[in-house]
Amino acid sequence: MCNLFAHAESFNKTQPRTCRQRNIVLMLQIHIIANQTGENSEAFKDNMNTNKLVALLHQALQKGFEQPDIPELARGTYYERWVAWHVKTDSDLESAFINYFSSTPEFEIFDEKLINLGGGAIRVSYSTLIGWLLLRASEIGPEKTVEHLQKYLSLDHTPATQILAIRGVMPKEKIALSNHIYLVPFKDLPSSFGKLAVDLLRGLPPGRLTPRDTSPHAALIRRVKLSPKFVEPGAHLSPMDSHKLQQVCDLLTLIGRCSPVSAGQWHNFDDWVPLQGMVDVGCSGSNIYDILHFDAYEFSDGEVSDFRKLYRKFTTLKPSVSDLLRIPLQRLNQARRRSNLVDKAIDLSIAFESLLLSSKVDTELSFTFRLRGAWLLAEESEQRSDILEILKKFYKLRSRAVHSGKLSDTINVKDKRLSPGQFLKKVDELCAKAIKSIICEGDFPNWENLVLGLP
Image (cartoon, rainbow, N blue to C red; front, side, top):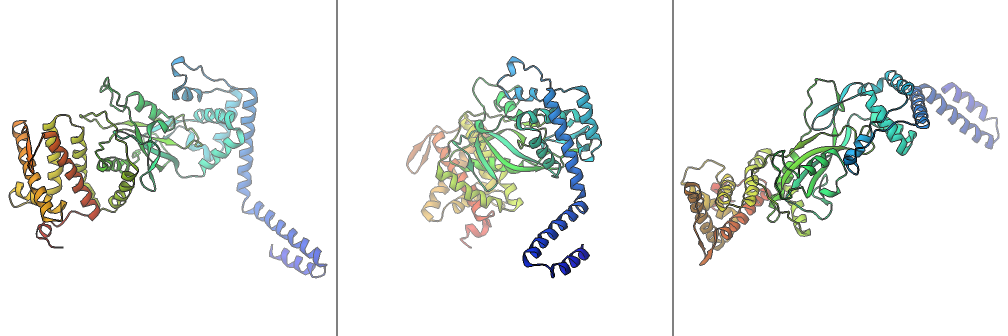
């Protein structure tokens, strides 16, 4: 190529200027063609293979293919879409497709391998791929279908959305909780087997159905890359980590009096991904919660803004700190779902004690409990005195609940007579405030320095 350019340059010097310009363009064209026939010869080969697959799809569409009968009960549901994928074409054409796949190494991943669903895996075959290609080509055309297939084969992962359905929260629209995590109305999720399964079970494990509606009202979602895309049958495949979404679900407890719980988790492949709608059926059920609730909290704009700031702080915590906050958050959440006030008091005591007594305590527990709480939650002496009194009476209430299964009829707070429900609501607010304080400070305080007023 260098010799070609040298010879052309020598020839150019003897030509008029306009001829020389045309020659330069010609040399560039020759250079491009030479590169394509050399370095990019494999690309040409792939295009030839692509053209063959496109031609097969056109031929199949012209001949037509057999679609299964849709059961009446399935019409109008996502199951109708899933049944529609199971199409059949002419046996000779099917053999032509399989021969094409067998002779092209890139398609080996579809030959009796297990496709990663995020929460499990399912076996796929060339027949599965043929079904997707035929129906997808009938919808968007062979060329676009093969383009999507090529795009997928070029990736080392499957693009998907991780979804955690939750009860107890009711957003009016999609809310960005962080740069990567969104809270969306459950009804706005795209149709999928996961959504259908959770909706049919109303967010409950099998055998726990109730006459009341416990369907999820919301879902937390985030974009993920499922890798590896495929594994050999019998190979170990770790499920996609859902810890991040579950953490956010727990942390939503700190918005108002929210008490969200998970109702099921699954992954949706992107719409264009091959086999989407045919195999992405992996769905794990919810944790088995012994305490059900039926209320859904609606956030205000201000609460959402405050939560974003809180979550940013939470993501910077050391694992040792965030791990210690798990029990307080979950017990505060469970206390809110309790209708029995004795059980509510016990759950709140576990939440508060795991916060204030997490480190080694050498002195009397009740005194340490209220002293730490007062210094953590207030800066002025008068406020500390008020909180000290509330926590003192709460510790006594908690002890009575544990040992006798009963609560006092009324609790006096600053010359006001409160019912147990009213009093526990105050304790709930203080517990949530304490958790927020630790998150915002980035760590649990040095309790000794705190109660001595040292920095």
